[in-house]
Length: 176
Image 1 (cartoon, rainbow, N blue to C red):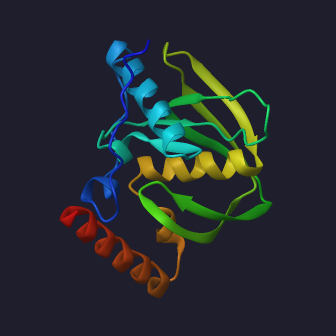
Image 2: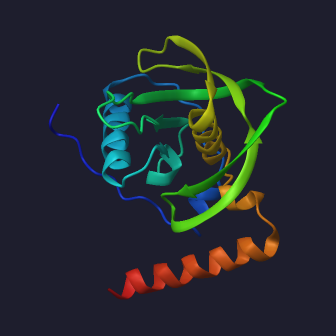
Image 3: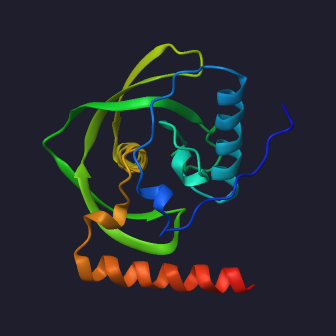
């Protein structure tokens, strides 16, 4: 499958990033192709997670791979219609970034561990408990499916400051 294509990543502010994604109902070649393209786009960016709404597709699909160690095999994951089914009481704070909000980072507190169930590309039910960076990433990406960005967790002033920077960046890109 060498006909993968890099997708354009939407930049905040974009109304499509604030919309709730629709459940996936068709498990076909088009879906598999989208997942492949999203993984290629995520690795190219480079990022550790990407949700379909970020590439302009309003479907409940996300891809992620949080393997950071040198010489470790990548672990690309495709989660369709993912749902958090359990969260730990313990919380973690990570400095989060987002491919739709380039070069902007902020500390976000989330549950340290989560259990997520989802469908794979064959439509089979999967469940896994995630911790550490994986837990942060999967929650961040599921937020995208619900029209929520990591900056929505920030205080209004910091959020507005980042949004203004993004508006300026989009203007500059449009001129270029």
